[in-house]
Length: 393
Image: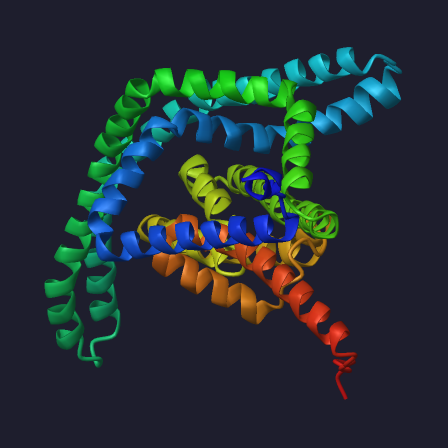
């Protein structure tokens, strides 16, 4: 009886860690099996919970985008220029200035740019019958001026294809305004969530030092120190790659869109705002973006004036060269570190999985994945004491 009383339970840190890892692996494995076995139900459940926490996810994304701007104002204006010593005051001033700038830009878009977009789209819809007549007039003039050439095949082909193409274009442009309207209604319906998201983002940016500290405390408390040090360093590099591309490419595309608008206005090309907006947005997609954005503008201008369409093509080529050789490297530098082959691969896979958004986000995600893969490979090679020369011969 005394022997039983003297046998006290003694904790063993090694076996406790093994048990925790075992429970974690079993839990993760069970979740994966559950997802595979009932995929549709799992997607419905995920969407339900994602919808519930969407204001916080949107708020975190807003805070992520505004944080670099806030840091810039803190360092350049309130620290270096105004010499404000209080870190608390600098934080609140930077936060207020950042949101004031963003809200001001949004106000300008809604008050000035969007009404002009509606006007341009309306004019474009009304001009579609004129475009149709101009195409047939152009073909008739060709047939009159060159009677030796047989245009019957071309005419028959266009008689079948052109009406369908024009109807498709007309339906697309006509449905654009209702689509924008329905989107606006949806935005109004989600106004409460947006307001909550903005409030969440403000609190996140205000308390970002506390959040970072608590995150580090959690990681260091439950994981080995060496692993945590490497993890925090890797996480910082991934954030630098991802945010650097997103912010840099956004600034780059905004500048290209503005330059395109200014040049189109100088050369008196029609619909400069609509076409420049398309060029600026599609420029977010590396390599293919400028050419994707040039297609709608070229078609629209071709129906109005072939000469202006040719001038627009030359304008886009000049802008693309300026962006690729000068502006892009100045703003982005080597933020992704990806070779053209991997950028094309990321755009292709991202586009097939998530459309235009996938084409854009696929590049920074591929850059992050490549960085992680390189880190892992370098670590394994270092462990094996293997050095591989990658210099080209």
